[in-house]
Amino acid sequence: MTGPNPPAPPRRTAAQSRPRAGSRRGCRLGGLLAACTLGALAAGCKGEPATTGAIDISDYRTRHPIVLADGTRSLDVFATGPGHLDPRQAADIDAFMLEYRRYGRGGILMEVPRGLPPAQAASIERTAAGLSRRSTEDGVGAREIAVTAYPVAAPGLAAPIRLSFQRMQAKVADQCGLWPQDLGTSSFLYDYSNRPSWNLGCATQATLAAQVADPVDLVRGRPEGRIDTVKRVRDIGQLRDGKDPSTTWRQDGQTAVKSQVSN
Image 1 (cartoon, rainbow, N blue to C red):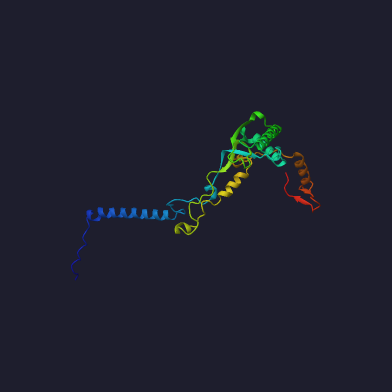
Image 2: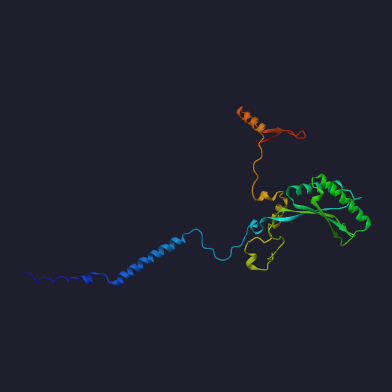
């Protein structure tokens, strides 16, 4: 004899089967939160972290750059002996006039001292006349030289004849010899920052700028010059014959030296 049938489980209505609005909103917020978390983790894997605060310049070439600017080129000529130009000063004048002919702008200014004793004044006049003749021999005419006088403050000291002209020069943009920070133990933050001092490298840059003959060389390179056609043809012929095209020479009876550089 069988017992009564068990009651059937209650059926869920369509409203009960549909997820609640709050539950769906929670799922959306959870997915958005997960996406934001993944994005933050991906951003954290970036190799370059964000830079905050000021960035100090540590390269001396950036702190003390070499720039091109107009400047005054000058030469002091002293009256020696009876007022003639000695070999040393004659060579200085030749180099000065050559530089003026190549790079000078405008004319040359000759400043002659005034207010000297008669003996010194006569020597200065003879030196100035010899300087003018030397300039003419160097290709600088008298019309390119303007003569003026300057007062002498101390007649007991040597008063030179000053020559000057304007030209473009290479120079350091700022002034050397500045020490804005104390190199001693005055500031814990600066002393242990392991940073170079501000003046470091300024003298090196100034020396390099002074040694440059043509400042344009710092801006662009020079074009190639003419090749030595005779040497190039000879070297190519030696290479074809299996010979060494390098140059061999002797100096003061020493062992032969070979240059491995050929045109």
